[in-house]
Length: 349
Ligand code: TXA
Ligand code: MG
Image (cartoon, rainbow, N blue to C red; front, side, top):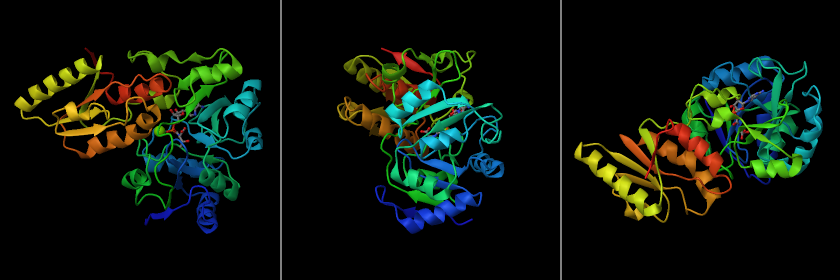
């Protein structure tokens, strides 16, 4: 299959392009499109055959449910059994935006879309092209991140083309996404609302609107015997091919440790990759050194993370050392991804 890649103006997406993409969705096909978090791979959420195509294209395990993307709050009523009070409050506060809410599904949502679950994940993306595509198609759009299962989520259309080129008819190219890590997932079917995946919307932001929120113990534990509730969170994700080790501590101690480890690896003839920041990259001796951005610019760090992990996938590094990014606001979400990429290998100095 030939994959057409259309450049779109994010603020004013070309009507003809949106119409062509929307008709593919209506006909049960797949379209990759930008959102504010990462690129999504969309299909008609209420058409089970269309949803099944998403799993096939990504090589995604069939028990891993999809997020349904909507453009108006009224769309929520088409798929939810009931709308909890918290959902209305949170939608008012954060939609459109990087927050996914899990509620009980109604009979219109096929089990192919929810990976066999009786609940459904719903989000209204804050991206004019995504919203235009949903509206023009008249469908609700099921969309996981538009990567091959197991690879880092795509933050550029080029990443989508690398993974899915030849397998899908259309990619809408809106350039680099704004946030770079996937939406926060909040489960409203629990007695106390529970975060199943950390993201740009933090616990504190949610608690300001609905009071107490818990965090799924399964996503914090390095211990793999505690299973996360979101099926997708249990897979080893985001991982570059080379082994990745995080080094945490005071800046000078981290630089010394990484340089010492690099020297040891060089003595064995190994190639070393390093993930640092604008402030530190000049101090390292690795073979390929990439900066996540300025240390105090958390938004830049989140936006660059997946691109950097992908770059190391192409490099012939034998080992990657990364600084730690437990930054104040979204550090929890950033470290959740980085720790998974590192298989939880962290060295405290
Ligand atoms: O930012 C995002 O959320 C992006 C963009 C494209 O919107 N989408 C995304 O989808 O990250 P995906 O499929 O890569 O991740 C969805 C996660 C998976 O971990 C899945 O297991 C979980 O959401 N999930 C979906 N429905 C669920 C449900 N009913 N119960 C528990 N977890 C659910
Ligand atoms: Mg994903």
